[in-house]
Image 1: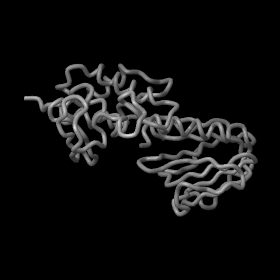
Image 2: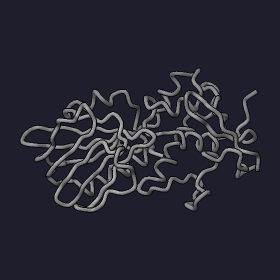
Image 3: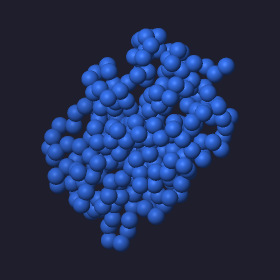
Image 4: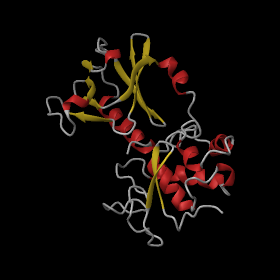
Length: 262
């Protein structure tokens, strides 16, 4: 699931593969960049901001940023020169970046765009504090969430304008661990700072590894408490985990451990 930790990890993969190298070729398979060539540009930084990937490049005195968003199913993969590109169908390829030592292939990328690096702030200014960034500020995240007291706490955690990097997995797991019914109004959350703190800690605990775990176990089938476990027994009380649509997403919860407020 491409949430904040997955995007951060992807930025590190691209950093190891491309940083400091001059691009020997590029291929974009989206209409807006079809005629664009980045040959001769140097990769100077690979960064993430919430769920956004920012590959920064320079040439002469110009600085540009290749921006991409993974959403639910995007990914970047790195191969050696001449190696077979495997793992995803070729028709999903949206970008290819080549250097003398690596080939980075972007599959099913969303919001792929090339912008002046000076324009990043305009693109990302709507985002709240990044749960894995140097700008992480739990007090500011709490302030932003509390400003909309009639929103559900699940909706508030997913809103990237409040805090950047939380997705459906960490939302569901945070609410379970805090004993919060997903439709609880922000105004009715007794300890909002504690909820925000836990959400950030869960994401940060998975930084640097691909297996996302909130339980402490990395074994298949044991990595989450409620997420993607519909009809399976709650690890705490044994009640069947529920799944339902919520705000155009799905949510998972235990009806006993996360009881609806009276």
